[in-house]
Image (cartoon, one colour):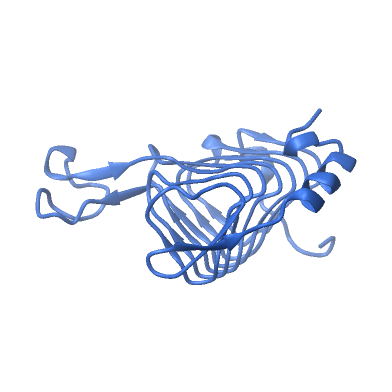
Length: 190
């Protein structure tokens, strides 16, 4: 990616080593974004909340992470969001208990669900999947393409469907072995 234009990373709260962020990424609140080592964020991503991104993370093209300034996404080590994924950290409730509208709407008239989304180490999201506010993707869980995740996942389990349901267990031994060889026993940096 040496010839690709890059985002001005000096705007971010913190940036690790070997980080590439495409110049075509929109980061609405860069002062709330921390990136670890070996991170790639591809073109045409739209990122609005606070982000804490671990090491060896890939966010593919056309990903949207929505959440205003009070939303938050935490991605552990060895995680990714495939092309077109949608991570929603803040949402209107849509229950008729408040008005739905733009950010300028007085807060007393809005009813929002504000809850962080967390990817534990080795959690991955397939193309076009949607993750709703407050969901934790447990260690090693995988969400299949096009799935809708409305509640926490179980560790080392593959999910698919709308709503997402567990379909089978995911072996972890090889991933943990390789991570340890990179200096990340159990997925965490030594």
